[in-house]
Image (tube, rainbow, N blue to C red; front, side, top):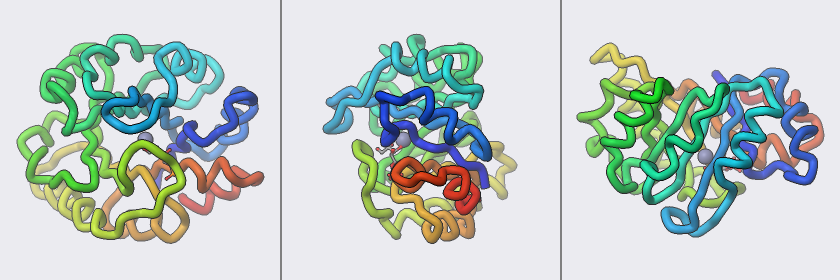
Length: 210
Ligand code: DX5
Ligand code: ZN
């Protein structure tokens, strides 16, 4: 299992130390951009994303929780940007996927808890990552919604049947027990915020998820 700590719940006063504390054992740094419209919260914008990119050698996995991703995609292209994930519920998501790929980055598509896999089925062949939200996007520290597990299974089956290459990522409500559940369902990357950043021994927390 690959692990992507979510910087959202880190202490931003000590950003550099926080990033260093999770480097060992992690595969990506998950970076949540929110616009206050698509979700009822605001996190940070491209300037902070750029600084995060400079403070860690981990590749950035950028999760755009914004209404108009086409206004933001070009602004989060940095040397260590690996994935840019947009939501299937946002404006012009098909053009957004094309834009990410055109700019040479890996494209991810996220679905909220109420969005079915059927809705994104036609686009699966183009994707490098599918993100299944385990909670309503917007805040860290919520409980995993159990009925999302069947979407992970469905995505794993479609991947197998069609030879697709996307990672199956799960974000929200991840701890040791939900990480095990999503792994059994077919997930390949877990995102974890509070489970890692609210505790001192981050290396041990990351290992426990792997
Ligand atoms: C939620 C964000 C998540 C968040 C997860 O909208 O997309 O990345 O940081 O936090 P936890 O792991 O605490 O649920
Ligand atoms: Zn996220």
